[in-house]
Amino acid sequence: MDNALDRIDASALVPQEYAAYAPLVREALQFFLRRLEGSRRAALWKEQLGLGPGAGPQDRIYALMRRCPSLHKLGQVLARERSLAPGLRSRLQRLETMEPSVPMQEAESLIRAQIGRREDVVLHERPLAEASVALVVPFTHIPGGGSNPVQGVMKILKPGIREALEEELQIWAEMGGYLEERCREYGLPAARYREAVDRMRGLLTREVRLEKEQEHLARAAEFYASDPDVVVPGLFPFCTPGLTAMESIPGRRITASGMHSSQGRRVGEALIEKLIAAPLWTDAEHTPVHGDLHGGNLLLTPDGRVGVLDWSLAVFLDRPVRASLIPVVDAMKTLGLVYIPGMMSGMILGGANPIYAAEYQFVIMGMIFAAGGLTSMTTSLLVGKHAFTDAAQLRRFEASSPSILAAVRSLR
Image (cartoon, rainbow, N blue to C red; front, side, top):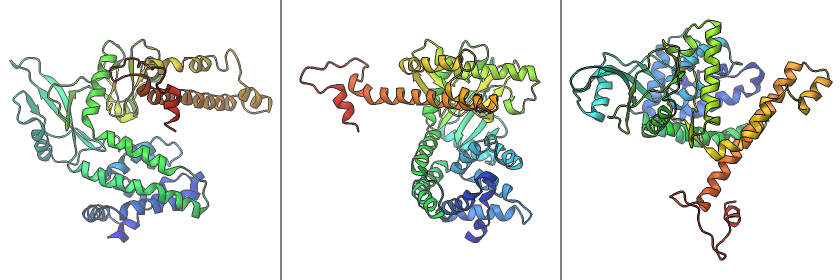
């Protein structure tokens, strides 16, 4: 069985310029597969055999990622990497919205276990789509009296997904140290794989916390309620910690909508203005920032609005954090127009292409912007719990009380 899985060539995921990492990627995949529970390995092996001898490495990688939630999420991230082969990227992009593999009868049983049998909910004949951890099932909500039915979708965790993800995250916890050790043996540059893996594990854990996503959805829907260009689905009152029931937004994926150039420009401007700029510049106390914007989470509605789905990885920025970013953002607005910064002017004087010089300068400014945001959020989190009570009231510090500075130093 393991020999069959060993034949999956993960080097297809490695761009040519990073060919030195191909052996490391192959070994990492085998490290992952060999630590899966026996019945899961057997199911993966059976599926790989079913692909036939003519299946290429790209098809085999896609099939494998589809069955492992952590690899599935990794595939969605890699699908945005333009340095990968176009054929592989095209297959990985299919992971963003897949055809459902769970039968409707099984999906209905999962739903009934969460909300029971409701006369005001009529499930449709088949699931709509399948994501990395959840199944999407359409339904019609018929309010009392039977008038004005509302179309909706239910997001419910796939069968066994919590157990599968828990197993995989434990493997990833061991993976960080393994990768660092193998990098040293291969003579590859050192990297903090443990930290990267820990961050990924944290994000994946949030994916199965549907009650958190429901909180994010409610707050995001309130924030964008009056926006003419953005729509966020509203929630139905029968959500549970294991099921999210939300309004259905009609439309097509934004990457497959076939927009003409002027419409595409308008939608692009709306995305930047409403999903990036608006949360920074609004006067609201807390503003939502979507943390997983990709083609599967963005729809273009028939009336030209942008529908934004899947708010599980959203963050909310407080007003002080946003205020701390104003100087850097103001500097970026005039970059290359009012003044030419040092790196950009130096490259131009040295004979570099001005376009490349501007791109490099924007990278530097982006790094400064990110550093400012991270510093503000970290400082707020560390100092806030010492300076404020649970009721958000400023603490009283007596002369004999330790100073805030001393409390911060104790965190080191």
